[in-house]
Amino acid sequence: MDREESDQWVSCSACGAVIEPDASRGFAFGEHGTLCWECSIQRGGTYDSQQDRWTTPPDVSDLPDERRPHP
Image (tube, rainbow, N blue to C red):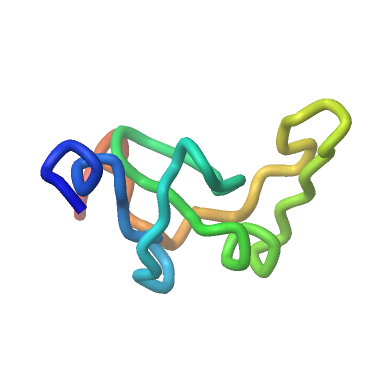
């Protein structure tokens, strides 16, 4: 894998699995947060493949988000 390819891979914010956002149906949130498909579904997310969108977003309230103030 070359440098350009490795820059496209990210880790799931919940389980740490390595995913390629452009090729996976993960869920992106915040500035840099991403959930893999499995974690998105386990967290209550519902994906509509015909509309190609999340109709119910997964619960990410317990995961770090740079936009929220830190205690």
